[in-house]
Image (cartoon, rainbow, N blue to C red; front, side, top):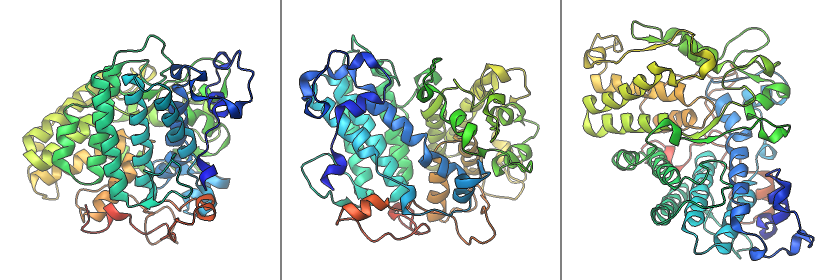
Length: 466
């Protein structure tokens, strides 16, 4: 099991596609020492590894299970129908993200920027895996522990918060590096600091600590240009293209299938039109053709940036947490701040600027009993929360947030405000609540627990837990 976490630097550098990083290194790759290379030269390797995980199979699975994309054929169709096994998943991020981050930390102990950046990446990976699997190894990963123990989901999320606190402390004293191999923020210290706060807020939302989520989000991502994005580049390297562009070329994922059946998300967008909202442009921007990626100019076009943590999500965290802790007026103010951004074209790229869209500000009357967004008579603040959750579902398309929200609200018994996502197949009786533990982990680590199954809620999402 210990070998699962061994880091081979040459392989990690290979992920970047940058030959200049290894020019002049003629040693055996397995004998490279920590200090042989400036840590700044390979800080992008755990970044790219994290992107490949978050925007890879794990992210696609969450989208399949929340009605946002359709699996049209082969493996995507099986995944769509909840047909998968332990061999479907892996903990590759422990080697490709965590161990790499630890080596950077050891190679540059006095560099506050690298110390902070790498801890944000670690916290992202640990919290992502904890959300997906529940109990996972954390503190003993990339240590001398031969068989890292599994910690409770709550403990891992608390550890992620600790890492983020350490990251913020480092970043507050950091200077921008002179050498920038930082693909996510190009060495912008303030960007990383705001991302750390937004990630803290996201994790607090998972654990239903809404006051703490609100306080963290206040210091989170403050503008669209501070969003944590993977930005593909125009070259011939396949790995530098938009992930959804690559998938839809050969993997049969899309927002419509071969029978012209559209995904549930598109049904939602069609029904959302009212006197203050027009989603025509956003639906077109979200369209993914499962058989011909070259027709897409939107979210699945070759060079379209991909979100990991965004200004929009941070505003929606503020909106929901404020509505829950401070009431309708403050929650509505944040929702309208997002709608104003969208009304200026922020929901789509420039290709769709001439498509129809409208996001007029809502008023408290719209959420009053019998109002525009409350025809069924919910308490006004609940009607507002329902709209915020719906906006999170739409805005965070292709991200983990819609699945996190669905499970969080199910566990809290809040069906009145949850998006009513249908099951993908008539043979299913429940929605998936977690991923299977990877087969490689079960076989290699004697500390691995008995897998509770796909439909067992994780610790934070069991009814009555938080």
